[in-house]
Length: 528
Image (cartoon, rainbow, N blue to C red; front, top):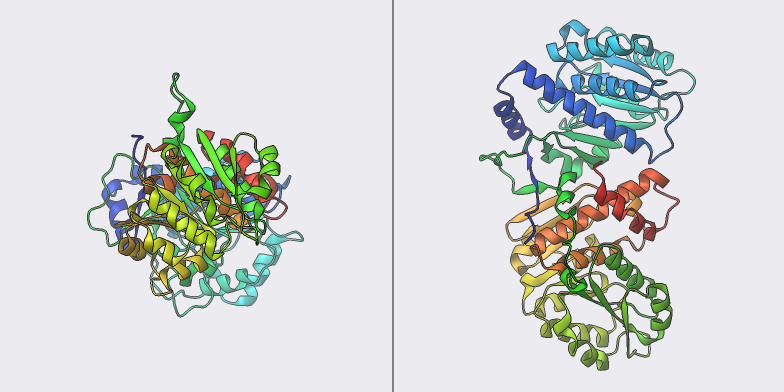
């Protein structure tokens, strides 16, 4: 078996604070080293994420909102990293309070920044010296000039924030949320103001960088309009450290480093059969592309053998498009779906399969659904059910639900759960299967476990990306060297990281879904 999947716990703010204190022991130097790692890590993330909007400008201008605590220090260290990385960049610092009121490490971060690039740093009046919206507006407009900022990093309020947000911070947040000239908006740990239910204007971030520990408020649906995309900046807090004992959540987050369990050389003496034989039952005349995309994803993600059962009218063109797969032409229904009479063609070959993927483009004809249910009853191995295969009766009739990995989006999940189970973990425990609930962040669930993947993003909001995911997960499951949960989670992470790389290279809009496959190799071979 391959090494186990690496996950990190999702903690509440109070749990995270207690865990950080247990690690750092009120040691100022240890706190400084953690702050430096956090600031440098989020600066690197911010530079990569800015590329999803546009190519980095020749002379980028950054606005840093600096609180007196750790988040402010993180923002200042990020500023130093960015100015060092881009010699033409300029930084504008807007402190919440006079610098002498800040914590010692925050002051140290400011001092180091000024030593590096004092001539490229502008310091605005502290917010406490600005008593009105008009003074805040005037200060901002003078600093932003004609062209505004290319990015804004919010480091005002940390996880120890206690509501309410008071003036003048509340005035600033409301003002900034209305500005169109801030470029990319990012926050450290949590957007300032989140948690104050009386204030309708927390900072609205495009990205929130969870540094060291991911906190559960990031995933709350009520906070989604403010949190934006979530990035987990792993600082190594959990390397070799047992998960905190007194935690109230069973949720975990997938760090990017988990992909390393897939990053290894193949044995010198190996055979294609060592990497699994995946069967794909997919496609119809109405939805031919889904089957081809799932097949391409399975091949590109390293499966040893792929046998694809598709309507016979599709076989010639598909064989030409992807000759690496073995395409089996199946009898068709009058409407172009897989006919029941083709069941024997699949069953006679089932002993060769190490896993099945079914559903992409399959259609919902009754005859096709009956055939699929019969094949699943005849197969003893693991199966990925996606798209049109996600039917409540098919899941209910499966003889071994523990061998099923379901990959629904929210609408499909409501269909198979009857709309009564809003929690995929509870549904997985009831049925006994693994569930991959796709969304802005994807939840991978099985009995007693729930992992969250935050990679990917809006570039995946296009037809076909789910078919690619099904093929990738099927490929990993077919290898048979890890648990169903681990294979599904790694497939989701790999798919999301490839999507991130694609968006940073080409943006979120002007791409095709299948271009994601070109970034599977990059996202596996590189740390980012």
